[in-house]
Image 1: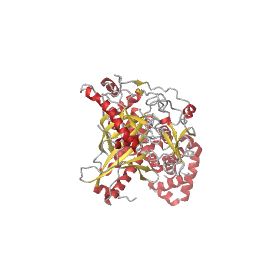
Image 2: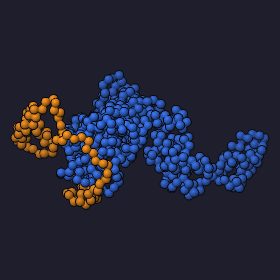
Image 3: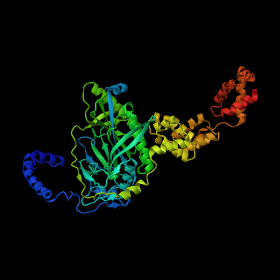
Image 4: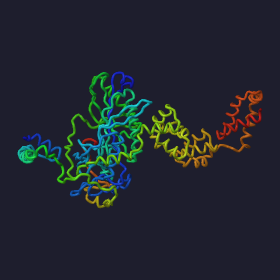
Length: 98
Length: 495
């Protein structure tokens, strides 16, 4: 599995990380090493070992539908870089509506 | 934008529908935290480290939400997954402070179902591909610019109260073979889905508040082709009637595009309720890359078959069966049922009957006068401005002879204008039928005196001529008289 600099540039764009072409070229082989290391797992795990997304053998962990106190709005907004009308103020959104 | 006449669209093309419906569940707390889901609270007062996506916080799934979604799936004849997971849908947009939405991707909890909907006595089966769980996003307000839309805005404001509210998405398979009825099938699907969700008690299903939302997809294929055309997805469709209008418009627009030799672009379009048109939004020519992966902070869901069967036992009567039972109980004809379904008034009639009105009276008001008023005002029948209890009161006033049908329409004017209950409107507007025979007798005598020829004909036995005199008396009384009593008084005098 060889990552190209194009793959890395695309991943960086999706993750909103600014990478120069030089940096992408430098990171591609390094990420390859990481992916190869993780890929070794597939060599050990046979068909009898299903892929898992969680370390614990648990299912159905549910919470009762009960309202608990929220944080005070002042505390929530205190961490915001900009606030207006008790709302988070964010810069103009480029691109289109989701 | 040129449009093709609707009939010509159907002559040349066959539409395929697809409906993606989002439903906010009516749980007390959010999907993954204990914050309240109350609508309309002060901004940012229902948030916590989990729904704000603060580092180190961990989500725990709301069991009631899972229960609600399984019940919805069962009511839609779906299979329930034996094992499924949540996934992260990664995107950068400030409506989700986590930079991802916790959703389900390739392992929906419910799949392969259907809902049979009825339009003009014809039943259409809408196949359901999947029902999955996710969470709602925060609410953005765009500031600056002329339209309040994102284009031209200077900046945006965010309220995260809605972020993390339990949401589920119901996705249909392509709905084929509906022909000219396509937009009405879509509307009927939404109407009947709403009835079902209401009967399940899992959501407020208020389209204008956003607890029920519809993205309407449609594509056109040349008649006889077995390949689907390119579809558009119309958003911002916030009422049942706009589902029908938006799809009709899109079919006519796409027909004109295809007829001119162009291709339909795969894109999101926005519905504009006032203009009755759609405009292009995001292009979907390139598939989005959301880099979905299984959510590591939540463990899998494995609903036991026993639990699923327990939930199945709590389901309300299936909608089709309920419709049949109610119209039989109420003694409605097939044609009357079509009107009831067409106007989306079944639940309102049921509530009105439950509150004490006769079924025929409840139907007369909801499927007739009130449906017309709602249509003229461009609002949903539910929001027309009168409650089932008030309709019972209105009919009670008629039955008691306090008002007649004509005055009842004026009483409705008053109730819809916010003047209070029917009795209060009758009082305030002085609308009661005049039962004082003295005033009536005077008007009758005056009418007879003014029309001696008519009076003579009645004396000669031509009783049907009384109609002319009754009309005059009613006019003199400004409609506030009981026509039957007027007739009695006239005949007493002349026969």
